[in-house]
Length: 301
Image 1 (cartoon, rainbow, N blue to C red):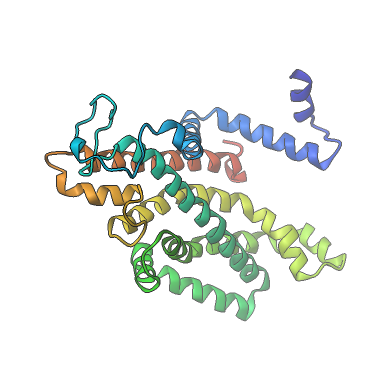
Image 2 (image 1 turned 60 degrees about the vertical axis):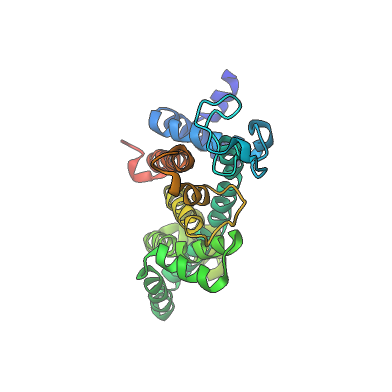
């Protein structure tokens, strides 16, 4: 282990792979020193584990109804978070709902940042009328509140998880485009970009191979910090009946179905609300920690 650590921290790396692995190791050490970031990482990892092994952690079928056990309070033997108005185990529904939440988060994270990164780097590198047109389109999307625009898109496309993901992705890309454009404007006049250009590299190669990698840390930080907002918007769409449809155990949909019992059987809506709160907090804490690690301006803090 000591030899591996010495190899990773070698100030004179012998290869590009060694340099990148060493940088990743140093970033991990900085992240590990941040207790709040590690708390966020534990929450996010717990979400991944719950989603991957939902049938193992769930104690009941999340969809099967048992009207003889409806609205049981938390602490009931066999139903430690209680049951809903159809007798379904709330813990099992929250665990399986983690899969839906992670599915939405993953699809949005694989679409919106990529679209924003491409638009932002192209606009920042090309400049001129290309920059003007792309940024005005970005401004149009940013002029609408994300939830309102997502509601309008889902109303046109129809309710469902896939349409909800598409609507969220189409409303989430403008901030990434702004971040990528700002980073591109900073690096496009750098000496190493000029050297690559003198070697005969075209604009597409420069943008893809040199500009985009420089923008990735800022985009990754933004993605992690935005995941809490994505979860809230997805839950909002589910709450309004425009996202996941019954009987799927989506957290926003669970809150919607339990709101009529909020004063007497508070746990029906409160438990999925706590799940949303904890997961959103985890992504925010992890995002703050990654910002301290990946942002070169905070490296010396």
